[in-house]
Image 1: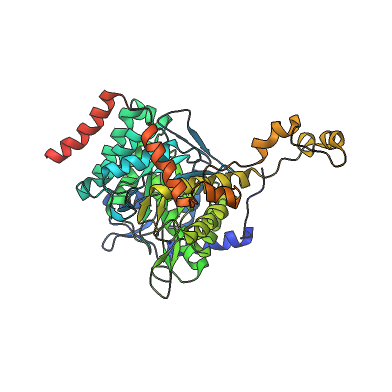
Image 2: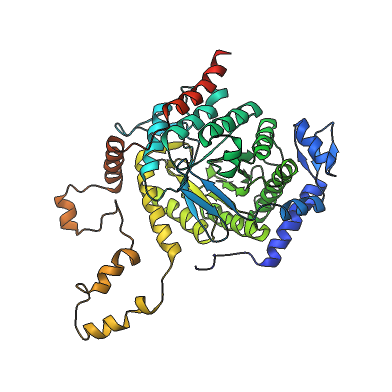
Length: 474
């Protein structure tokens, strides 16, 4: 395995760590959750109950880091689809939570609904390079306060792969855990074979929402993995410098780690980051730029420094459609986090700074990830691949094409794309001059017409739906 790509020295990582500790000790984190305030206070943190600010001492942060599990195993509904999050392993997934979609039939933007989300999830389930699914959309045809429950339901019904989704309140977190328990068998089986991960997105600077904090506590209590991240905007709600933004982001995630560990030391924890920047000309969020990719390298390095599994954004773009800009932005933000060895890289399927879902982009991103995976595999160098005997056999001016060695290694050594066109210009003209988006659209439509994941048992699906129906009738 190739060593990870790094940009920070060990001494710089330590300096970042100390900067984050100083932020936590002297500025603290505002946490409007009575349960979290009590947990922190009982553990020795300085708690200002009036302003709900917690100042966390260095010894407590570092004790929680030491006691965090060094690896996490995530499962799909199909338990054979297992992801081992440990140093060196990289997996790729979709991203959320779009509220609009590019209609596959008209090519126009429109609001995303439940049926769209189900179809996107099924296509992603079929694509071979997508390892997990962070629910891609937030459907507009459901009550807002129940949206994440429908997200969980649609995901459970339409993919066999591991699911990552949000919970924005204690009640919804409890119901989501109950859903997972029904599918897994019970809560203990869910703990042993976690088929779901809660993504907890903290607010910057240094503000934990009450509902998010309570969802973090619920998931940690049951031993469901939590992927804790914040997304500070360099130049807006964090310092304009990348180092300052990374230090703030690190402080926020470490505060989330402390709360999780105070609930349950064995609870699986994933160190996350969505730190990004703004375009100073327009005020727009930038996800497809080099700064975003550079900060993901820092994410990978800090997580390795703490010996904690990591996750972050990648395969992202600010382009509003599947064009050349989307291509170069997504390839940049796929390759750098991948070679930095973030364990979970997610961004597949969305354009427009994560606002717009696209079937075509889902298929194109699957190809980008296939290329990234080939890069990660590096070059195998041994007696077989050096092929000295075959070179001797072919000799001067010969042909390697008919050799057994070529047949043996052709597909192993060389990535075979699904939608990239490598034909001659004349062949391309004869076959309709289709561009990448057109070829991707055809593949998405083919998957939609031919593929269905293994369904949940009828009685299980009915139990999940009844949990939501009970809430709607209250």
